Image (cartoon, rainbow, N blue to C red; front, top):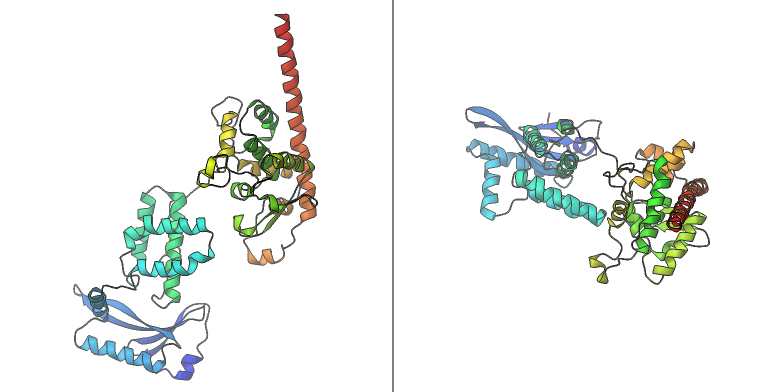
Length: 423
């Protein structure tokens, strides 16, 4: 039965895509997101076999029923003359030197829309995945001709590169481009759907953390190792605040509220893209005042020690980790575990969990957000008072071991001095 303007206009989205046929190969595809797309379906002979082809006509109501029928009739006339609509389209592409259906062209259009919403580093990572992993394989392929077997072969190629952690992100980027193409009416479905199960399984390795029973010895090594006073203070403050490296390093003096004892971290510096307020303990405030005497006249808490900043206005992301390595915590010294700055977050979580602090307040203190939208709607409170209490508890826990380390070093120094006098 032929379609009518009213039937097309009143076509409502359902849980799954469905088609409304107008006959002669022309149909309207109604998608769950409400998009209504005109397509023309036909068959051509290829090597003695009938192969189905689909031409995208456009989106309703931009393309009316009358206009879609005219396009369908034009395609039928071409087929009667032995001309494939797809072949004609490719010939026109070659003649004009343009190809808006190449995967690369569609991906660039998607990136132009999507990238401005992202942090600069995230956008740069996506650009790298497109250029290094995606374009060399499918960048010059017609996106409307890429099939599920094509993309399954693409996944196998990624598996063969031995980059399991990155491969999932590469596939995700490709999938987002296909979703964009489907929304634009270029393709009917995303050929990468559920192909992530074909990827080589990646097991994430947790960042090396400092065990609780090594904290005192860690402080002893810290006190015995020299170095930049700014980086030394940064190490202690990083332990106390348990923040991510980027957010921590980009801390500004204007964001420290001495009266309220808080440190504000703006959303552009946060991984989760949310403003974050950290309650500060008395020891943290003491250390910040010591740091202020060194860098208080500058914008950042931890400015670069290099002239001109070496292209970076703050200490590098490896500065604290290098200090930790100099202390011997690189996994090569007996009795000393391998430790990195990010592992201080695990130490904080371990101490708080062992002392029976709630999971919700620990997550909040670490700046985690709840991924489930429904749960997140009921998890809006910042729990500042509860977080202040555990920040002070954790600070006391660390300071107790710091003072024990100082005392033991003082006793060891006294014994060594007496031994020298005896000799």
